[in-house]
Amino acid sequence: MSVPVGAAELRQQVTRYGPVAYLVTVAPDTGRPHVVSVSVRWDGEALVSGAGSRTSANLGSGADVSLVWSPPPGDDYSLIVDGPAEIVESGDGPMVSVRPTGSVLHRLAGAAGDGPGCIPVSTLDLPPTTDEDVRPDVPVARAAGADEHPNTARIRRFVDAWFDSDIATWTSMAADDIVLHMRGTPALDGDHRGHAGVTASFVKFATLGIDSFEAEAEDLIADDRFAMAIVRTAYQRGDETHIARIVCSYRFDDEGMVAEIWALSDSQDAQRAFFSDPPPSGLGIDLGAP
Amino acid sequence: MIEHAGVAKARGFLDAFARGDAQAMGDYFTDDLAWHVGGGHRWSGDHRGREELVSYLCQLREGADDTYTLTAESVLATDHHIGLFARATAQREGRALDVLQAHAFTVRSDGMWGEYWVSAAEQGLEDAFWA
Image 1 (tube, one colour):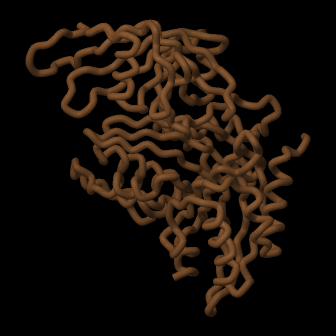
Image 2 (image 1 turned 90 degrees about the vertical axis):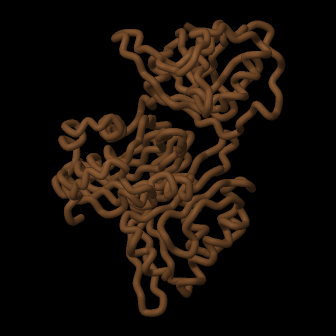
């Protein structure tokens, strides 16, 4: 069951649940769902956020989407907002704009005690935007350029495979002597060399107790020798959330294989703190000599 | 392929750095930009402000007795970001620096750079250089 949410009430609920939500879109041709973590703010009567190229492609000239907020600590209800969405131009570039037409508070499965499963929230007569609703740094979505370098598409495929842990795809694009320089993530820091070393770092990541992880490239640029991806990431572990934009840098070798990777977060202290805990599972996986 | 205007801007910034022209370096950035330096050396971390950034850039040069050189290996640009891959070389106190760095700039709608990142592939070498 769920509980419905009203206009002024919806704005209050969005404020209570915070700016971070999941945006759910569906590919129009395949029906494949796509979920990304986004930072949301009000723009008049619409909720706007940045989005990556896949979200933009799914929306096309317009489509229905859902925004989903996780329950705040101690709460048993997720906030779900549905509505038609479109890509709009803003001063900061294209954004996803969602006009809420339906909203509910949806009770978590297995929540203790009694309570309605679904509480409707009204979405009519939304009040004007207030300053405190506005977040100035909402990321910008970009579509691929028509004249982009061929390596841009290659690095997009590599980045997608990387963040989807599609090891077969990324190893097919990585040099045998690839080096992954990890810094600022204490549990993973070091130079991870070769397919085996980098794969081991994936295994190590899997022991860190991360409940969910979302990443989407905001922009990608490449030439024959180098590539750069600006990636929005969101990690969730229990009640902890770590959201950051990361600059990922790539060097290609003479055969066009990815030979070197390094990255830098825009929230280095928070990243260091989030990744400083020892692996909770104690699986004792040996990363081997870097 | 026509070169993106951002490429020329990045090269202009490099020229300003090479001249040690603090005014010209600062002209590319917004007043309140966020900037991020990777690694674990004296300037590493997340910072804010154009004056502070220009001061850092000048201290790089002064700290290495004006030997700090950035040589572009590749400049990439879209309307929203610029990626500059450059080799950084310098000498100080008998130590030599020679690392590949990635510099990223976020381009605002007015063309000013509102965010800046710099990190080295072999960051440990840079940390040791500034130790």
